[in-house]
Image (cartoon, helix red, strand yellow):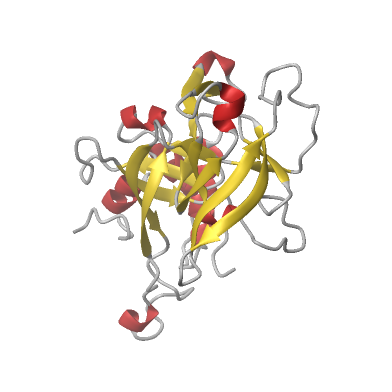
Length: 273
């Protein structure tokens, strides 16, 4: 329909997460002219980022989840079932917006791409022997990963480094280069996340065969896990998924207990890269 988030219509853009403020800024920046012309789609996304960044609440989400097990959690935390209270600001520059609360436990979901068996150059996330911080939580040291018969990663293992919780006096005792997002298996909310891209792969659609110019990767659907604050997300409110970009709850597609989020724009323009 006309409100499909891939359609270049006002209804489609609004359902995808574009705000009136972003559309007005885009029009102001584009200006007016008596002659026709083309404006890069990236300009529209930039207008959205520039209007949402100062006001959008933050949240952690894992879009391609793999399980991370902290093998010494029970030993250090008083039992495998113990959960640690963690918090983070709703917005890093607006303390008046309050804090989000969530748990950290023995098992958490992390991004599959945050683990490598052998460290690539410039990679500072999880590989055997490396330490990283679970953002807003503790420092962990990766000990390895488990793959299935086809070679697909199914689990990552790590150990907790004692006395390194964010916000505590010993938090900076160990310096790490990597900081990764996560959600605890204990309180994560399962969600469908729709990663929308521009509808046309061609820079100037209509100059050739229109159907051949369609972007075949204009929609990717993820079975994701998101932090518990997003269980109460409001439709039409732009949210920054840390690392991933700006998203909005799709009230039309969501069902009780199973929210659906649409990506409006990434953290930066990566089209064609």
